[in-house]
Image (tube, rainbow, N blue to C red; front, top):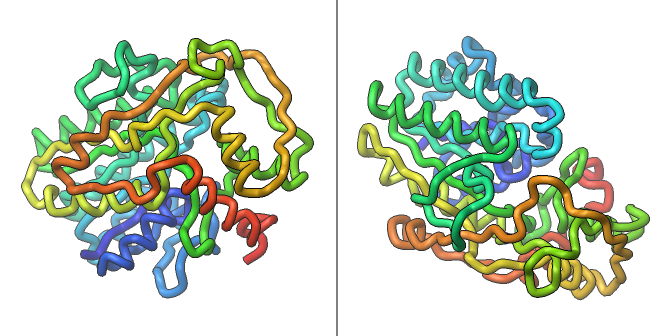
Length: 330
């Protein structure tokens, strides 16, 4: 199919573009390059430098490229910033996404894949987290994602939109060949921060919270490789052929990994020490978050190729070792 990847120059979007090509689809990227990188888009893939909230421009792209399905990754995703600047997040993650959906409706595009988040669950009452647990976000970022999930359900019922919403846990890693990886500015994710500390690009790594009720006192998270995420999205395409399909999937390995275990994996991969400074807990950080992804395995035939933190970190290190300045090296 002709697939529009909104945010296709960003971290997860660019990996999904590569997986689409491998699966025989024709991806077209739409990205305003505020956080994305032109160099992350593979040669031969069309890039439209357009904002997702520009309804008229998006509509032209949908029609000119004969788009059949839209994948949406273009969200602001810094939890702390969302608390400090909620309007920024509502304007982009909610308002602009509604303009994207309106452009799709007018262009007759009725299939949609949405990048959601486990943050819609807030602090879960039970673990692991399955799709039917109550959703109660504790920050504006999670709330904006849940708002779009609600809008998608309404559009499915009213207009026959078919959608799949994937609730990610901690996306991590890089392409196996080291060609593309994680390059955020600012960077807030633990693995790239630990690698930057190990290589001397950062003086130290702050470890937020060492007194949680977990085996080593640090947070437990579910790290899932970015290419595994991408393959799950594409596996849902066949189920989106049914008009009005409403699909929700949690994506994670189901294996909780502590912050200290991540740091140890980085030290093994790099052969260097990560200087750590222990810091107080950050407000709103739950002690443990990990997925029950049985539904995705059962319905999509999804298989995780990177099941543990060691294999995930190894791909991240391959990217960072060959691109010490990120995409600026390209």
